[in-house]
Structure formats: structure tokens, C-alpha cells
Length: 401
Image (cartoon, rainbow, N blue to C red; front, side, top):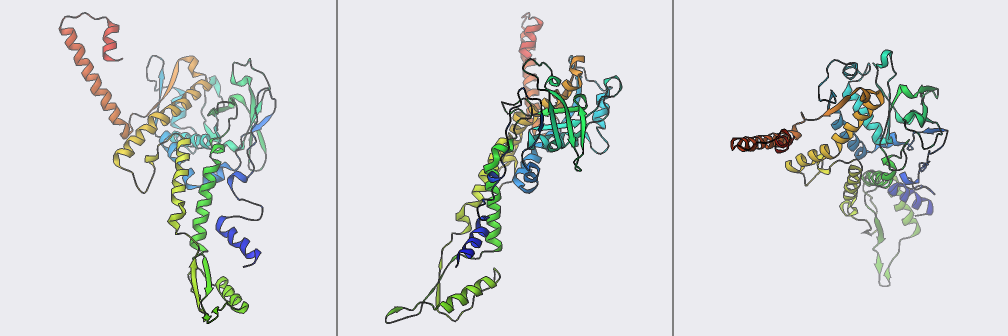
């Protein structure tokens, strides 16, 4: 086999081309920039993050699971005195946020953008009397943040950000004021504006997943078996080698055939395999480990996803409860806190609560709480019946409220 054929073989098997690895990590590396004290426009960009979301099923499965779980909440508007508010313009906005989406769709969209870019944006301009009747999620990779360049003594977000620009597919940019955009971020620990994406830390697992799928496809489509055809003819002097003409004929016959066709030759040859069985390449084990890395990056649990072994009802139930309690509920509540704060409703004494109590897998927790409250109440009644005088605070402490 000549050098060109060698290159074609390894190119097909490993996805390599001359001087190109073809890996996620070999693409343009995101340029991390600190924005402290800069007056400039900063693109929200993680280098083809949306394409990775569309083409890597493991990544999309994790991001969509997180988004769908967050979108199951029921938003409840309350005052700080725990009074539930049903008649407010925010309730009207939640019931119909925009012409094409429900509130669950809005939360799903914001979650996907946050997962890909660690930034999420919604267009929600102020109307008369500070009210808003439109809440439209925007694609984060189309947004540009206009920084103010002001230094450390800023107490409000608009002291750091002058405004935003939205870039349409036609490359037309529209200027948006600070008050027209609701801006959400997931901190990376260093940047308070435009933090780095989780995907930047997942470049190696994502690269391995792409390579694993490519290798499996090549094995299925292009390569039957890898090995050596060697001559078996011999005489009293030893093995008789193939003639150059015989070698060329067999090679040409090999290249011209489909993957499932047999080679027929009059030459006396034997086959010496040079490849491993697919299971010994550990492709599926590698895929599992890479998926676990993605799951951990988004704070979910391995058992809530489809798997070929090791999953039981108890594992799935506990995994769902852990995912809700550790990630989904706190992150959704943080989203709602940001909405209330950016709408200025916190100054009026309002809270927006992400209620997940209706989720079946969390009902067990609610039942346990109810049972505990009944036992505490019984204990309190026995204490009072015994003639012990308790203050109101002492009674509340016994009830755990």
C-alpha cells in the first residue's frame, strides 16, 4: 500500500486529514477576556456551541433534560408576608409572555441558552407605569454587550453595562437599552459580565464523543476486517512469495469491492487479523465516561438518563430527587430572583417563587414533612396537656416553624 493509500486509510479510521486533527480542541479556542475597566463591545461567543448542541446527542440530552425539568415549575407571585398575589401585571405576563411561547417555553429557552453560553437574554421593554407585557428570549450568540468602562465603585448593573446590541441573521444590528433587556448569567468565579461557558471545560469529553461516533461509523461502513493476506505456496526451498502482479491484482480487487463482498482469488493465501473486536476498543465505555462528565458539569444525576445497565427504580427516583433539590430548584429560583430584581419588584416587596411541589417524585419529601409536622404537633399537645406553659416562640420551635 503506498503512502497515499496509508493516509486515506488512517484518515477514514480516525477522522484525520493531513496536518489536521479534526477535534473540538483543535478548533479556534475561545478567547477569554477580562472586562474590568473596558469600554468596548463584548460578543457572547463559545465558538459554534449551538452546532455542538445540535450534533452531539449526549450534550443535547443533558441540556434538554435540565431545561425541561426547570420548565415544569409553577411560578407563584407572593409578597414578603407570604400573601399570594393573583391580580398583578406580572401574572398577566407569565400567562402570555409573547405571541408564540408559554411561560414553560420561555424557561426552557433561557435554560438552553444559559447551558450553552452561561448567558441568557430576554427582550422585555418597559411600558406605561413600569409595567411589561412582552418577555421574549433571545439567542445569546446574537447578543453583544456594550460595556461602560467604569471601575469598581458601581452599585448597579447599569453602571457596568451601557446597553446591548442584537445582530439579526442579515448582519443588521439593533441597539437595545439596558432597561429593555433582562440579563441572566451563570458566574464562572472570575467574570461578572459575560462569564465563560461550561462547554469550554468540556472540550475534551465532547471531542472524544465525536471521535467515538466517527470511529464506530467507519468500522460499520468502510472497514470489514483489518489484517494481512499472505502467500501459502511453498516448495522444497520454502515459501514462494506472491509475484508483484498477484499483489496488485488482489489490492485492486479489495479496493473495488463493497464492505460485504468477498475476495475471490486463485492464489493460495492466508488471513492474519490485525484488529481488535469492537468491544475491546472500549468505545462504549469511553462514551459513557464522557457523558458522565457532561452530566456532572450541569449538576444532574447519571441515573435519570437512559442507560444499558445499573438502573433501578430506586436509583432513578433518588437521582431525580437529588437533581431537583441540588440543581433544578435552586437554579430556577435564582432565575426568578433575577427577574424580580431587574423588574424592580423586589423594592415593592414582591417575590416570585418557583414551585415544584406538584412534581410526583418530590411528593415523598412533602409526605415526610407532613408526617414530621403531625408528630411535632402531637408532642406539643402532650406537653401542654401536662401543664407546661410555653411561650409562642417555644411552641414554634417545637413545631419546627
